[in-house]
Length: 463
Image (cartoon, rainbow, N blue to C red; front, side, top):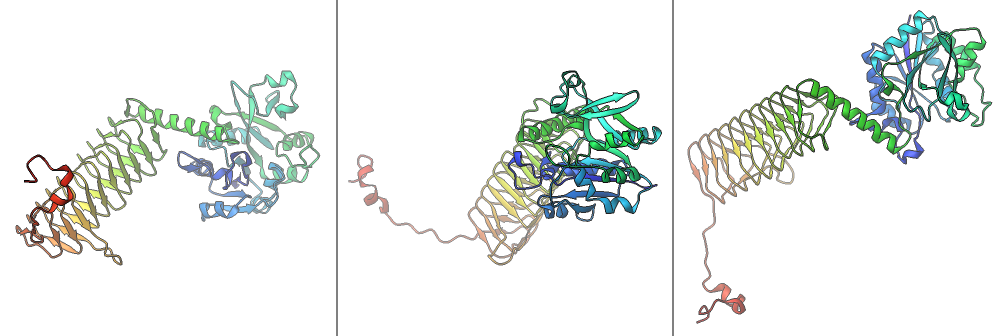
């Protein structure tokens, strides 16, 4: 018996005023469609068909080979969208099919599993996933009959008594696949919108004498979707708060959560403190006893233990233990800071390895370089890695001392313990323990500024 999924993701979202399919809008940096697919896969449901529509190519590129797709060329309702997957459904019609909305990101694996168990135990032709809301305004109400379901009534069609019902339709359904195929053939457009409604399958099933049930989810957020920008903001806030609470339960400290956004794939070690304005994205992993923030952005980074980052932006970087960096530091992809590195203000590191206990104090660019341990960079140092055609690497040995305002013109190698004098432009390799001085001779022009500054001379200077 094959259980499978159809996800409806063809909506435009006109009220959003966006140029992408609505399910591709992000909640915590992940498209809503991605949340739904992940919930299915976490349940063990790998046979998934996504119904596309508006700008279908964008959805197909995002999915890659992860799911099958079918196109709903004309938007004629939720029932019509599922009809487009008829060929997919007929390939395995002896099991059950889950229908989900691609813009309802908080459907979770536990609800999916428990609803399927309920669906099978009750031998239902269709099982609607529902939830109880304190404020059900705007949702279709569930009318029950005994242990089953009598109807789904949209709010605009509900009586005053029916509007007081708090149990609402989530838009998610489990069907016996054979029953779903037969019910789809019975849908009609006999309504004000001229559309095929998937909700009508409940009434059709009951007319046939089949059983229809409603599984009440313990997680009321499964019903949340996004039709407006306000809805999308609410989804992001709900997701953000969930993640923060999860991390707090696992020993993470927040002195204030203003501006703190943490993606749901981020891992953080115990007794780490996250300060305001910090954004953690992608597959970032942070160790124990760290202080991150304020105002940091880390994306796909690996951070060790006892690290302090203050106003640091880092992307695809590795930071080992006991590193201190900031403020106003940029770690670009390919950066690897080893244990005990110290980086001060206005420093940028790109595609470089920086050895243990090296100090890059301020106003320095290190790009495409291999730096040894216990190196000291003076203020204003630049590794000049690009000649306009090719990017070359610098190699800096252990214990080097780079004087202020040194330019290292790659490719160049500094041996162990080498020094550069302040203001030098180094174009050749420097042997171990040597001092490189590369400056032009100083030329002086006496009394040069007297004419230039004759109206601002101090008394007696013009004598």
